[in-house]
Amino acid sequence: MAHSIELIFDAATDAAIISQWDALAAAGLPSQGRTRSESNRPHVTLVAADSIDGAIDRDLAALTDVPGMEVNIGAMLLFRGRRATAARLVVPSRELCDLHAHIFELSRGHISGEPLPHIQPGAWTPHVTLARRLADDQIGYALTTLSFAPEILTATVTGLRRWNSDTREEFYLL
Image (cartoon, rainbow, N blue to C red):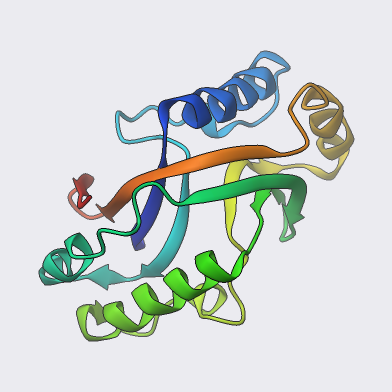
């Protein structure tokens, strides 16, 4: 499983995204809200790798300009594979892309193996996952189910966390 470094949001944004998770689940569709874990919350993954050494925490905790950053959560998007992942795009502003590139570079000395290819600067699509493993015949219903969601949701970043999937621990860094 992958370890990750993630942006986390204010309570109002979490509630807005969780309402979308809940709507999908209530419609009988796959939903990120079905993940039963205290650590399951809306987030944007900045770095993902086989392993991320906790020694990076000190460097990340020094990024005091992260809390308070505003990002816009916008359009629905789908990542395709055998099944689809439904997500909301986090509009890639210059500030967000610069932060991603900086944290990606900071992480280079703290990861084992190569970072996942889709997370590298220039290939990264910032997003908040709504549902995984949607079948083709569920995609239209999922989009209709989420038609209540605002087109743009302005979110405030409240901090960073590092997720260790091996120990199932989260470390809040800011």
